[in-house]
Image (cartoon, rainbow, N blue to C red):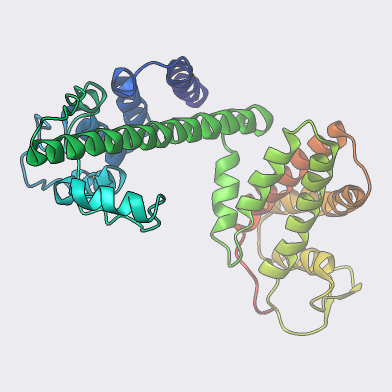
Length: 339
C-alpha cells in the first residue's frame, strides 16, 4: 500500500517535470500539480494552485476574504510570488531622464502591487500598441507603463515556473528516497527513526542520512554510511545511560568503566541493567541486541578507511535490527538510577 502510493506520486511528479521540461505552458500543468499536492495532503499548495489557476480573487469555491486557514496562508505566498512595483507611478519623462544620467538603474524597486491574474491570463497578455511619434505624452506614458507591466508579468511567470518545478521535484526526490528506504529496510523503518528522534538528540535523521548515503554510487558515501551507523550506536550509549558514576558492576560480576568517553560500555551497562527489569521474552531480545553492539562498532569503524557496499548494507540492516530489538525490550527509555 505504501509503495503503491509512492509509485503514484513518483509517476505524477515525473509527468509534470517532463511536461515543464518540454516547454508546455505552466497553466496547462497546474491541474496535475493540484492532484500531486492533494496526494501529499498539502492543503496550502492545493489552495495556492487554485489561486494560480483561477486568479487570486476568482477561486470559485472560496469567498473573499478567505476564511480557510490554508487559503489565507496560500494568499500570503502568492503575494510574495506575484508582487511587483506599481507601474502606474512610472513616468516617461523620469524614465528618459534617468536613462540619460544613469544607464543602469541601481535602485531596488519597491514591490507594492500584487498581480491577481491567473497564470493563463498572464501567459496570454496582449502586447501594447507601438508608440507613434505624433502620440501625446500622456498616451506614450500609458504605453510605457503597459510595456513595463508586461515585462514584470514575464518575470513573475518565470518565478512561478521555477517555484512549481522545485516543489514538484522535491516531492519526486522525497518519494524516490522513501521507496529506496522501504526496499532496503521495510515499511516499518519509520517507527524506529521516529522513536529515535524523540530522544534528547535526534539520531533518526542520522540513520536516514546513512540510508541515503548507501544509495550513492560513490564509495566515500558508503564509508560515511558506515561511520553514521557506528556513531548512532555510540550516541545511544550517552542518551540511554544517565546513571552517575564511573563504573558499573554487571550481573556477571565484571566491572565496566562507564565514564562519558566509554559510550560502548555505557550501552552494555544499559542492556545489562534492563535485563534485571524485564521478563524472559524481552531478555532474549536484549541478548540478541548485546551481540550486535561489537560487530556494529567494529564494522562501522571500517568507514574511516574503506568499506564495500555489501558490507555497509549489512551494517545498516544490523543497526536497524539492533535499535528495533532495544526498542521492543526497553522502549528506548533512559536509565538514570540503579535500584
